[in-house]
Image (tube, rainbow, N blue to C red; front, side):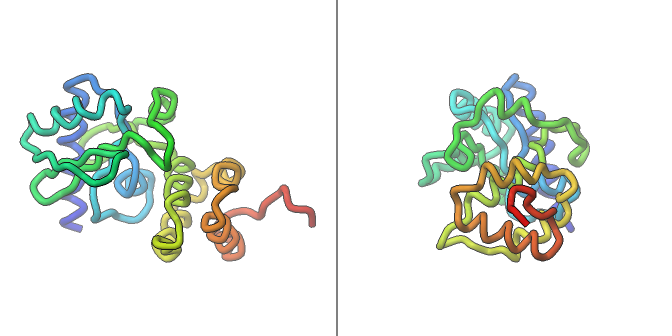
Length: 188
């Protein structure tokens, strides 16, 4: 778990930098899943920020020694803390990050700091809405929903993902495996 320890140090650095500049943010992605009791993450640190704050957030990270990188995507900016990637996400699953979205975060201990962490329902919805014909790895999602299942508002997940056939297929599998409760809206 040395890589997770390094990611947690990066979360601490990001938190201190953004709080020091008064920039609203919330931890999302794999580190947020880990903070909520999910599996360890070894990928990157994902942080939600409003679009109007993303350039200031990137600058705050550069000031504390991170290296900025220009991504091809138009919904985030990137920085590197050594070889650890930090994604500053300002559009999540196609939706702009808003004050209301960030207000849903809960302060949790992540490494050595209290950090605003997005709710489990948001994290599951976000992971389901990125599923498509090019990225459809249910094996990656199963441990996440299994470990977070008691924190998730499943009717809300069904509602938010109703237009995604990939998400619906995953939810069918999760229900059949007993990971989530049966859909109460379906007639017996």
